[in-house]
Image: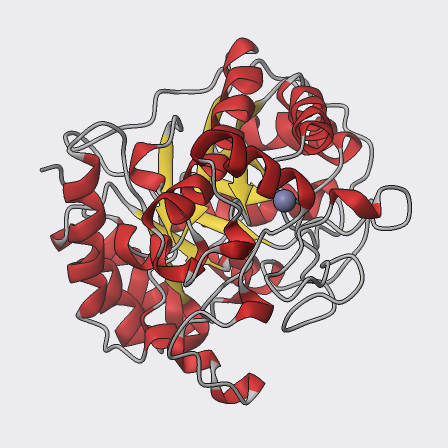
Length: 365
Ligand SMILES: [Zn+2]
């Protein structure tokens, strides 16, 4: 196919994949770190029209310098999509929402996180109606997540299970979003501070002797903050155990820097047992300019100290074509092993024209 076909097909609408006659062996490659050729990714919406359409999109992206795609879907979708991705030489990663899942609200409302104001996300989620986060302390939630990722990791041809929303609800939103919700989050307010359910309070009490609801100032309490970093880190560990047992990788979409991630959503991601991180270095969300992509990337790379690779996520709606190319260069200058586009199917032809030469610079550190 030529480039023009790809540019047309990359933006097409929704339907289900057709049945595949293709078969292909595929083993997940090692993710590169630091040296050697870089690798570039794209988050994709699940709007694949047909298997032919899927292959055309992947071929076009591969030609433009994209090596891996992350897409949400069910097992049936992945079984059909994986051989086609392998045939095009593109890694396929299963993109999942981890803690933010509304499907158990009716059957298990007790699984959901409770704010310091005593309100469950099952009853009234913060910010938006889909913000229904599960409580990471609960055994039932952990067992459900383990089983869910075990099923995905068993699918041939998937390179990784990619964890998104692997966190608490934002106790503080990125600053550029405050006006949208008519909020000034200059500190941690109770209605956005999670989780104070009976299980979390009991677990913390057993470990520390303290009830988090009785603390004079819960947001400033170091051990209580750490408890919540640790519960998310534990969930990541449990998932990694399941996925690694089936010789698949675990990757994660995380907040842009270790400091911002801890402060806003209680992710201590530099310590996680994952195989790569994809920080969402979305400068516009933090009222920053494009060069911030380099500074933010550098902070993450430094925190990881070469342990695992880091790929900088770029937010295309805030990046006109020339800025997208600049942002990609800033990411690489900050030490990223590559970039990841949010979202790969929203780029205009001008975006691809500006970006492709940058992605072709397959340099190493
Ligand atoms: Zn809880």
